[in-house]
Amino acid sequence: MKVQKETLISIIELISKNLINSEAVLTELDSHIGDGDCGIGIRKGFEAVIKVIPEFYNLDVQDILRKTGFTLAYTIGGTSGAMLGTGFIELGKGLRDAKEASIYEWVEALKFSLDAIKKRGGNTKKGDKTMIDALEPAIESLIDAIDTNREIDIAEIFEKAALEAEKGSESTINMSAKKGRASYLGERSIGHRDPGSMIIAVIFKSISEYLKGI
Image (cartoon, rainbow, N blue to C red; front, side):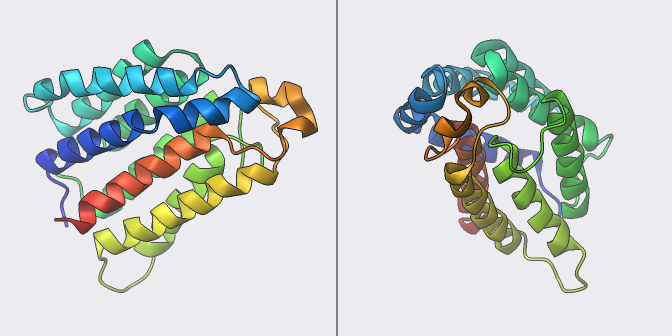
């Protein structure tokens, strides 16, 4: 199955709307282990993305992803902006010159993006109480799915990835933060869900919701 440009644009729009609607929850989470401004930054960033969506129809897939990434990096700021911006920009790079990428090419590009985010975060890994705790399990799930010989149901494999992202995000509640501002709290960060991981969970849930509806 090829992912059409129009599908990507619709998914980005749904992700944006769902994250804008998550502002209060993200702010609440961040108030315990961060500056308390995560929700506000995410809302501003994805509101900016929605404003530039009309421009996407004149761009190719790679440039849509890059523009999304640069928009987020410039408007959100801080760690969240840097990580999300890197993620989308590198996802575009990972697709290289594919005009209508297959699911295999998308999963490879997601892995490329994951590696870039981990490096940008100072070699962040699972267990550090960051967005990687949700992102890596989700992408590993997709990699496992395309490694099988059965026919791939794209909606099905992204539904599983969304569940893995949610489980990974929930697992951060019992972790002690090792990266970012939350790391200053040490064991006092235990008992609070990482907001960055929730952003990833919302992103994958949004993708799954859209794909199940088409």
